[in-house]
Image 1 (cartoon, helix red, strand yellow):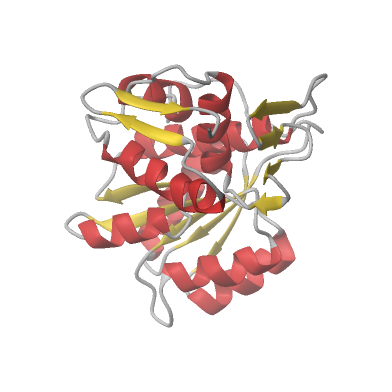
Image 2: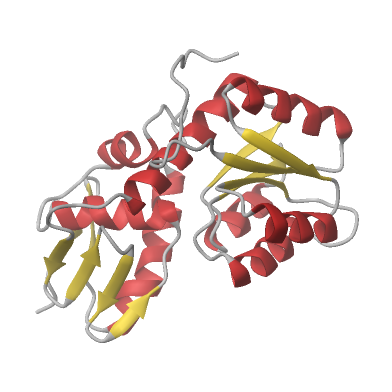
Length: 242
């Protein structure tokens, strides 16, 4: 099913829990089968209300979420689930031509998206990448704090502060900010960011980097002088505020 042959498990050795939400039984069954092959524990839901109920009972480590559902859309599902479990990463499934859905989904806090029809191998690779980032973000570090100016990121508690203000980030946002903060004053290209943060070939869709940089700016740079800067034609750099 995939080129990966090592089961991905959580730090405590337990299987990763995935909630698959789609009202098309064929897609739900296909994704579930692929993830069970990867040794994930999987539950499914065919509507927004069912997804919210399953999430509360199941406490998933990742949610594969269709944007279009029969009762309310995937964005509302994510909002309701994140009210109880903010950190749970979400991968959206979207219609091939629904560009607006993809952009809205990502800027609303989604961690990634895959368009229908999709390659099962690519979908699984992206899910594994998101789960790895989430696990890495929650692992205990000997020296957990990274400090750049008044911005502090704690790799042990998964907390980010700008001054006294706490900043809430998704797993992917956290990993992107961590990469920027580990390389202060260094200009990073979109290709470098894609390779480090997403860990797979994005097919040239480097616009996802722009989306996530924009989202980080809304959360970080609105709390003080700008720290995340664009170097035109090169990439992005994070500098201490002057």
